[in-house]
Length: 443
Image (cartoon, rainbow, N blue to C red; front, side, top):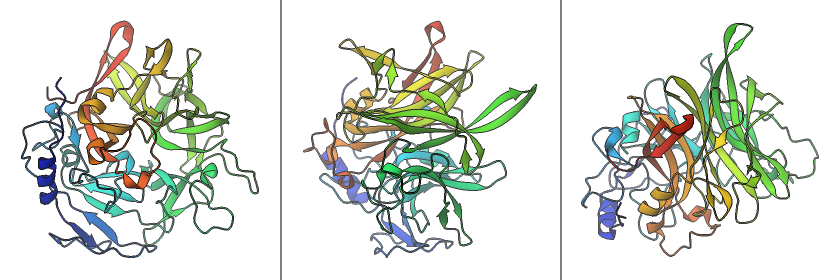
């Protein structure tokens, strides 16, 4: 397939046509302010909500680079760029931070909210609107706790069977008398904390994490450091009857020299407590060889997002995850699978290179064709027609072409990890092994 390139002229035209932003108070309908950006306001316990309206613009170029916007979310339409279409060449400052590690939440009324890392979430009118790269609003998560500056990773909201909603985040706790946590000094005590709403609707962190509480006065240690959470409902038979349970998938550091981050599942005892017993889903070794290597020698598999497929009348469970250095080309979308229930060891898709086992990078072609880096953390969802989509984040290299993306870059705030969606296909291959393919082109 021919590699397409970015047209600077087209990008400039898109920038000129990009939509303006609106600022509204919580609970009040927005009034549009076209052609200007509303002034910033100081953060409060109940912050004013910043809304960014992104209007689709007609492409002035031949079809190419990103197949981003169709009139409807046609599964045959190929890859979509959801955010970041209005970025300028050389841009290093951003009016808002798109939520990296995207988690797509379809609300009961049909709206779609996208949570992740950073203090904002995005809101779309519908799943169809989201999948075709339509207009969205940018809102700040209302909380007295800070979700910015690495304070919390992977925010998401989970709805429990009784209708209650709880927000979860991989959150640091301040030490040394600080009022707010600081990266990287407090990163060692990061844990998955639940948040519940107060009377005014602000999210308030509960006192204890879901598991691995940090002992008072304990020496800093990365053992037990946890984040990257995702919930899965599992139905099994107990004493002859079917019982539904909620399981938490997450990653956790299990050793320090080198750091090993592996993927586990724990049964939830209630919305605020996970079982002390954990089931390993995927480790950092396969067939006696290390996987998930980082440039500094650490080993990491992270961001587990479970999903399922029924193939030829049989149930298969999958986990999407990422590995390597998140802020470089050495990051990708990976998958692992198992037959039946998702609770238990999974088989990763691997290749062999130079006599060693390496995780298969399912986004390798996307990165090459579209000039993307920092690609990973895919959330696999299904549209109204039952088709699968992988929603992931990535950096567009054309925005900062002077950067060496082959190695990790520490200037995190000077890059925007934008959100993309690509249709995918799951089918049964030889020997009963499921096959996964990302579909960047119309079919």
